[in-house]
Length: 343
Image 1 (spheres, one colour):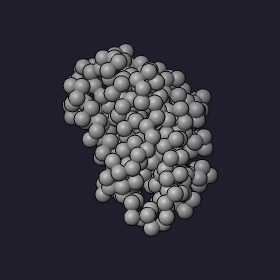
Image 2: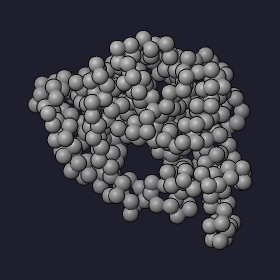
Image 3: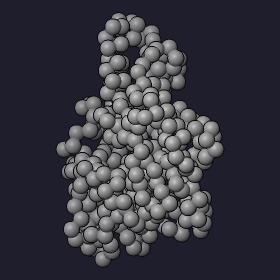
Image 4: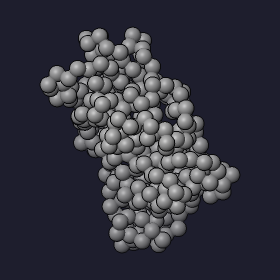
């Protein structure tokens, strides 16, 4: 049994993973109410919340006294203070139980999260099934990261494209904030967009050319701000759904266009989508269509595994040994740890 610990930002999370069965349990404490009035995550508050939340979660996870053989904890990237709380907890439990403590890369957890459902469906043949899906092209989309990567047959990850400025999740949240929607606004913007016409307003799509494999969302945010500045309050209210739909469409067009360019440039056996923004139903649907168009299975992380979660960290300890470090004594947090640093 592997205990996963996640505390990279504002989610305190634990999970138990049994290699023979799959995820045995998940426990998450959300901090959204604590940060709501500030319009975003406040690091000092997040650290305090982690300290208060982890012990009740641990009592729930250890109910029935499961035999923990390994602990996997997020070591980065993330907020330094938040990472330190999770690592401190993991190291203490490792000493108490005399079990290995493995430092996990948060982004690699997201990269492998679409495969969790595949393992749960049939753990006995998972390794063979996964090998049939490599090389794999995956897109991680969240509030802090937007990157397209290739997962090779040898388990190594290489970056295909990444954002030059803002992450798409940050762009959606900031776009929602311009409409006066409280934090976190991406999900509410999605609801408004459902009732709007995505072709009603024109917004820029960065780097449409195939030769430029990068993302950029700062210009998109600026374009929305200028558009809203030119509209009266009455006009904003009247056209809010349409503008939200068009804004979201522009962001997702960029994601899907670059993914299609990557699929055309190389051979892959599967397509994947993960990270908090992958919970958006429009984006999930568009990726399914991309997979069908290129004759590839599309693996999308389950909704409960799209945000920051400990299940993907525990799962990573089993399926991606190259992505972890066994260092219970000297394990430290690494706020800037890159996706490929531990490949």
